[in-house]
Amino acid sequence: MTELYSIIIITSLLLLVSLCTSYGVNNFFLKNASSFGKNKGGSQIRWASAAKPPVGGMSFYAVFILLVVLITASTYFKILKWDSNYLILGLLLPMTIGFFVGLADDSYNTSPLVKFIGQFLCGIFFIISGNSIYICDVSWVNYWFTMIWVVGMMNSINMLDNMDGVVTSVSIISLLVALVIVFKLEHLNLVDIALIIGTLGALIGFLFFNWNPAKIYMGDTGSQFLGSFLAWVSIQYFWIFRDETDGGFQAHQFLVPALAFTVSLIDTTTVTIRRLARGVSPFVGGRDHITHHFAYLGFSDKNVVRILIGISLLSAFVIWIILDDLKNNHWNFYKTLSVVFYFVTTFTIIQYFYETAKQKMPKSAANKQSVLLVEKLDEINQ
Image (cartoon, rainbow, N blue to C red; front, side, top):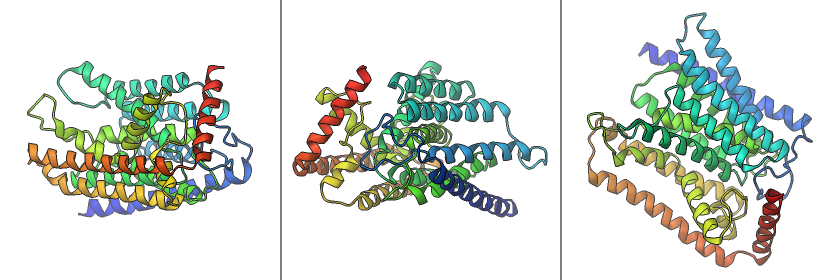
């Protein structure tokens, strides 16, 4: 119990330090880097018409480096024990690659191929350091599935970053779910806890500037870093629920990751399928996300974010309900079916509102979306 109290005190201080650092870094860039990027477009078409500096990712990375320094320094005082291979190969390198790939895209509007190569490298370093998803006894299947998940997560977070406060808010909930799992399973790895708490503080500090109306965006710098970090968190704490006595494929292992990222997975799936059906690349930005269609229905930007926060919280509550059964392997087909039913129902309801919004979409918005898509395609082809 004493150890738990010590962890709570240390993590609370760490949360405060990270939040203040994030707030300070964002405030600095807001005042001194107004010309940086100025939202040149990157790989996205923003919902808001006003150009804002996409510098939020700077605070994420600054807090992350601070955490790495603190964790490293703690070894000299025998506070923490950490594996250099785990920290450097499995965390520092992938997050740094994600950060700089995003920074290059924000600054020079690089091609999707450059971003994909960076995402692929992040997955490689996760695997090399032992951070891979175990779904069966065939190693190469696990490695390829890990690569698909990492690349998919980084793109999913990037695609969802299209309206003020959306990605920041739902990512905060995902990290809170991870902390619940950490303490529920009593996996008190202080290094992991420090990194999750610190990143949580970074997101909260950034949200002061990113809530509608946003003063700054996280940009690809932030979304690529955050995507790689959430991929790592999910590998460590969301993909772990399986019966170790069975080396085969287990459907219930997919439930927690799907619930923890309900909003981003539904948005990415919706946009990808619909763009491919229209003959448009999924990697070209547009105003066709679920966020935009809620806005076409008449919801304000703030209320759109609140709706998505509500969906994320509901999914987090479902995780809370099923966590003990997953932990103790008290699971069966009917419980899996119930969770799948919840997810499919949520997906279907959002598709209904999406289709309804298409009928109410102003012609000016539809025309503008088409023009922006054409301009973006021309830009890529050049």
